Image (tube, rainbow, N blue to C red; front, side, top):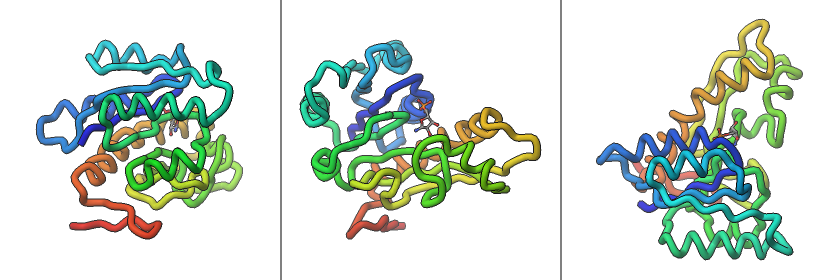
Length: 200
Ligand code: GRF
């Protein structure tokens, strides 16, 4: 399956997916990286890995839909089958979501449905949770609400700060995204009637 990755920043999840896809029997190939920020560090990383990398700054467009149309054109040009949002800090319009329903994934740094939105590590510490983690899910119109594909939990250690927690979660995000994309690209996990169906 041909996969395009959308980023806004350093792209550490992107890098993990690029690494995994180097393995001949990984069921996905990374065909493009698109960033909505021209200075996204991940663009340079992708280029050094020989992956076509496109900066499509949202600020160059009059509206969200105009920007999304430009992104869609690039996705069509590279013949992407699957889109992975990885640290992509834009809300996707319902129109764009429906264009890619069942073929767009996102990673969120919490055990959804707990702690949607931003600053999840603060929310977790505030709630006194003893476990935390990350979730890869199919993207649907609601933010951080789509059917779950894969999750990994990590312990909250005493004395954890948002930084130590973010670091522990990020380290399991990479393996979780690699696993989730493989499930979707190989057809082992599909989105059906708003749920994830596992076929194995
Ligand atoms: C990560 O915490 C991820 O969960 C969130 O964006 C952050 C940055 O990810 N979606 P990356 O290093 O840019 O992949």
